[in-house]
Image (cartoon, rainbow, N blue to C red; front, side):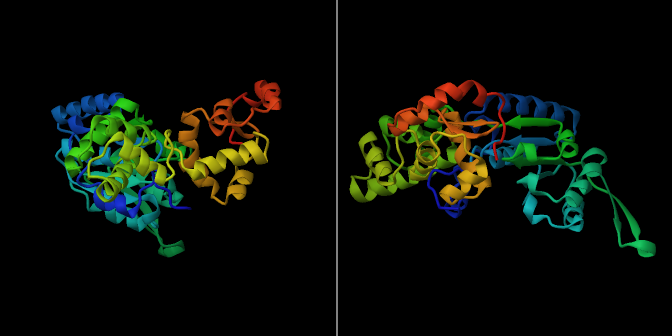
Length: 349
């Protein structure tokens, strides 16, 4: 996948810089108010009962704070956290090893939990329900049944592909929360907080300009703040104003809505090459040279939030808003076809 500054997917620079910016307690966490309130009530109830917090599944586009919330849950419950990911757990024995090392009340965070293998996933079922492990080693006459007890723990799973989780795994989570894109006031508060922590001189208009282009995603906003800080240091007096931010982000080809040249290429491909659509996902992926999963996870969520892209049973369609943004004439055929195109929300692959 082409490197993009406005993608919510974590990059190496984010991993080295996010640690100091991440809120450590729930009252420091900005946005996602309903999720915060429900988590606060659930954790307080668990503390009063002296029990581990219920298993939690967090889903939504990348960069919205799923890992941060997992760490906050551990901190609020005064527990240790073990962090891993679905692709890193290849064998049932790997999962068993992780679970047997957890102390009572610990939090196990599994990122990309939808990528757990089926055999590995099945090890989790009795562990989540009964805090026990049961699996068979070997084959035939040499097969042995292994049964172990594990300490009560909290599993926090995170995924960008909720539909790819198997129903048996989804059903074993006590609470499921969707993290959505942040609104403008929350984004401004996040940029202000990050600038204060990192010591970046910034005025109110500079905050607004960066927040507007942050795609409703804290990770993107923090990344843009770092790039604008660099520009201000080299090309200005070190202070970030609206003018400095606009010039820096224009140089990075990030427009006022937070779209970059790759977003533009995707929309133009649908509008110009396929007459506005519908176009199948695989066809679209081949046309712009990206993986179909990348389009679904990285490109589409924000374009759909803006109302520029629609998923229909027959494929992807560019909307009137997209044509207006691209300064193109909206095809009359889409007006005529709209009622049949917009029935349902198929994948169109």
